[in-house]
View (tube, rainbow, N blue to C red):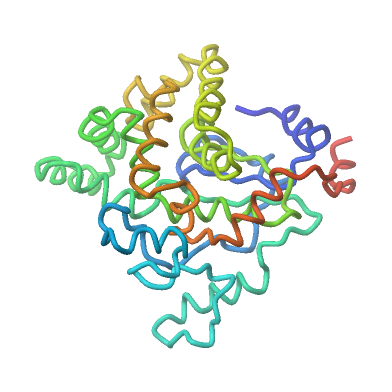
Length: 322
């Protein structure tokens, strides 16, 4: 529910150049962000990656774990996890022509920003999350009902069913753990934007700015070396700020099928999720590397987030709002 005044503040006072939108298409349509989309048009470069999903550390031969953590994703049993930006497209065969075109596009653009404001859309609830987690978590009877609701166009019934069958059982803690495990590729797409200095300052948002956004910010803070307790404390500030809009959030949750308990930001949810991530993958850095955020990328992101610098001003756009 941002206003034109909020937009003016974001552009003129804060100087945001790049927006990362983590919402689904349906959420974006309900929000009616036409004014924001005018000033922050969708970027032409696609933030994408074409590697295998991450392999939990406990599923890997213990004799290889230490070597993998030291040497990085290039030693991963699933094959080359390098980013498309750094890959030689000449070795790609015709069956991967779509991936080749995508990699070529990324190589050409390098996700570098121009002086224009722009927006990247990265739906954090990706296909692997929906298919490998949500669908596999519901019973056969529930799947049958979902198919019926889908055919009849009863979308809200389907969302309510999934909310009751899946999310009501796992709570926010389960959601955060599932996002980290099943949405690694989408997380990597969002983080790639932080690699390039020209994109800064960057605004990350979802619908309520606490779950999907919270995961992205927590990973960035962890990457630059912030202690986990401080990361959790930072996340907990959301709980205080959202109290005034609690009833509005409850209403939003009903539209998505999520249970009312999701209109909260309990510190334990983030703390447990990050602890589980480190237990499974060894470190945040290694988790990111498995998902395509190479060591070089991590160095670039860390440098950008920890170095004082003055962003390039976008005076032409600022003048439009004066």
